[in-house]
Length: 160
Image: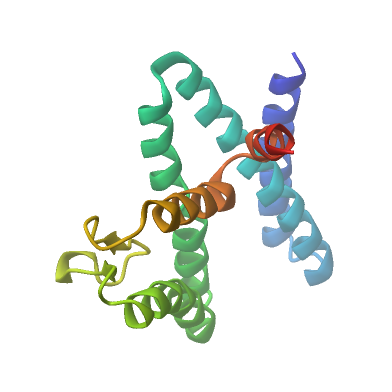
């Protein structure tokens, strides 16, 4: 029951944000409501991903997390472009690209990209050139950045 209340609240707050935007309410108020809406909607996506994962297994959960994990970046770029904020859109894209480029340029013998993946926050790994420990750390770090907070907390607690 609590889950449904939070899911309904997340969409209600998102709707409130739309009302505030079109009513031309105070920009600071809109910003605060947007932060709450994003947090609640991210939590809702996390709950949905966990539910699907519990039913269909970890492979499906991984695909959903890697797919849905890029939605905030996509939305930021779309909304920034619609608002005429070209610099914000460019900076958002640049941040994703720089994170990958630092690894690719820093260790081209282990990490690379193909033209198909340029412009996407995807990094390819040369499996025969990377130590199992380093690969495990990269996978764990990536998962910790994208996994729902409840799973991260359980994982961290179990490792202590």
